[in-house]
Length: 494
Image (cartoon, rainbow, N blue to C red):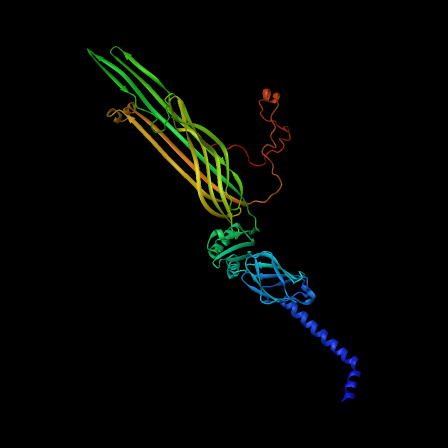
């Protein structure tokens, strides 16, 4: 037996090699298991405490620092290589440490934040240091909301970060990209249903598509008006013996057209005992009005923009006892206000409010020696949806109005033919055609366009005095004017 033992010992080199291979194999397996469990050798690296419940610090890691992430309200068992004499927790409100034995501690996540824990022996030497991050776990609401947004809003890439406070209140943070402002609003509205309140939703979503919209509004109006007036005033007296008879027939004019005319002529007959004076008043007036306003305005999707080209004029509103007049300023000109919304399908939603107004004497009146003008305005306010570059008529008007008024002397004014001497006729006809067009465009920055003032140069004194020119004229001669129009151009007469 002894001989056999000696013989086995004599084969030592082969046995040592086999033992070395087994040792290396066990070491490799141990290292692999340590990597899977998140344990860093010698106390280095980061340990995800949310994935493990037990941490063993080896004797070779004495005095080293471990980084640990631990979920709030979770615990971690830590086995130390030496007996602990003192434990120091920097932030007890973040994490707590409880010693179950001299070499085993239990770490508890109390509140979200970062802290560190020192384990010292009885001599005050450092056994181990744990840098701990206590984090709030992502709730199931975040995963469900992210899946819902990806399904409901195609083309979006929205990430959801969600935490639950006090076990009931969900706080949601939305990030990522969407194609339009409309998609962002929809995402926030959906997240609000999960969070319970708009204050619990924060959005840092980026808009990937074009978000600037230029709106072109065209307001075109043609107005024609015709006024005709005809009336005869008769004044006469007749004396028969001691009796004197008189006639006064002055039919009123201007009741329909609000126009008072002084045009006309008069004739009279005077014979002994009889006199007659006839005054003819007649007027024919034609007027035409053409209005074309094309305001343009650019705004970011979802933001309101406003444009005004005009001014204000004073309107008397009150006359005091001391004769002092109080004025209120009233706006006139071209105003455009709109709010665009670019949708994910390329459609542009518009909330448009446009108005063109101007002072006019029609409908105005005079009081106390002051003429108060009226205001004529064309206004449209609506909500529409259009693709970029499309034009839509949002408002239009075709109006043909006729007003006629006849004033006469009862009885005599009803006589055929001769009754015209005792009547006055006031006639007005007005025709109006109005259309309001809107055209949205997606706006991108580019080169500066030509300005309206680029081709205008004020004429010099000599040209203004001797030739009556207000602007300089270039290239006049056999070759024509430079920059002249080509084609059928000229004037249009109504």
